[in-house]
Image (tube, rainbow, N blue to C red):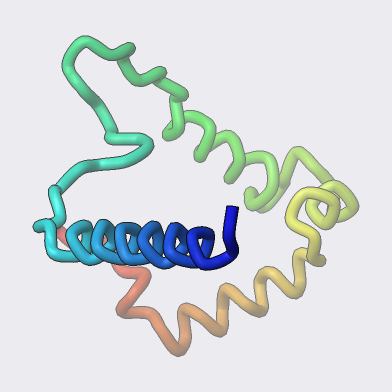
Length: 105
């Protein structure tokens, strides 16, 4: 094989590839979903994880006036001292209170 035929083959393939890419760019984008698509008919139902119950349990365990777990356990779970957590919470409520208000939709 001569080098000129290899070069010709290379440039032909390159032109074909570029032409194919250009056609792909010009195609209208379909609204195809990828990955997880939420609830679909015929799929397994969502598992009830009792989030509300566990929210109240978390509040009772760590944020009650008489919490179930001590300060050491609080720091282990939230990676900060309770005092720092309270200071951050107070600062957020003082400066951004409107973002944390319960609103009726």
